[in-house]
Length: 459
Image (cartoon, rainbow, N blue to C red; front, side):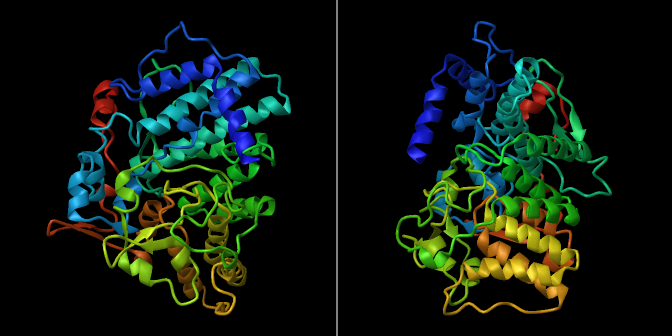
């Protein structure tokens, strides 16, 4: 079934409009004037439903290259001196939070999501102009809205300050592109405006998208609910985070029982498995992949006896006595970062705990743990202490979402709470690098070429 679906999507990409715009967008966002190059008028213009669906089905653009610098800079693992010296400037400097990033690679954490925004705007304009309001046209419109919201969310986690209701109205936000017109002037919004756009796009998507999808690389209603839950969690709006996580889990709440999986040298998880709500992966950054990336020893030690994730997520590294990550929901070494059922249980549990619904929070936490521990060792956690339960949930989140692209965002938001603050430490060639809570380096610099060509303010 998966092979047939992928074949169907590949066939769609053969349309001349798709190939034309695929080449166009890759060129647009890898060249110097990333937001201001005008498309060639000789290219075929998309007009049909199939044309616009083909744009959304270009997985090389829409699902395969999501920002990775935050994961590089986070604390799931570490690299050796030799590895650090061998990788690109951006990979090397992102690891130690240096300001010299994104300038040696024309395709980067800024340009990739804005390519998605460009595609999404083309489709949103096309559905408004040519669509007839039928479910099929609404579906494509919803996909475009989802992808634009997903892209802006991803960009905000790296290029904006952490959302703070007290300062969001003045903190510098993203360049919000309302159309595919690349001649439109670039201007930065505020963080409040950025998140408003994310929520607006995802809300439109939730209303327009169907429940059933033909492939998990196409977003459905559950994916829109999941991203709304993820966004509201970052905004500390726990009532809405709970509500949208709940809506998502009512559509897809099936957890895999890790007791039914077998650990080995290959990844134990299948691509498009039952827990995947929407399939996306981080951009391929060699610094984050086995055998180079070694798992943090304290993180590895946090998996107690009977925790099946210890064997399923990790394998012994060639660099002894360390371990590599082996647990991607992509089914390969590529790092899955889309929303999945396990994450939504954790969002609903955390939101419930913060809202004082301790018993509800524990129910979700224990349901997840029951499917992660061996049947012989699982013991439900019990407490009426809300603060203790919240700590348990965050500890479980730390162990469950390894290298999912969520840790950087978690560090940013949890550093606002004294109980969960952490100073991240890296050591390279004997030099100690520290990233304390609230440090300005939690906001990455915009590529210099973008600042030079558009005149927008640098972070």
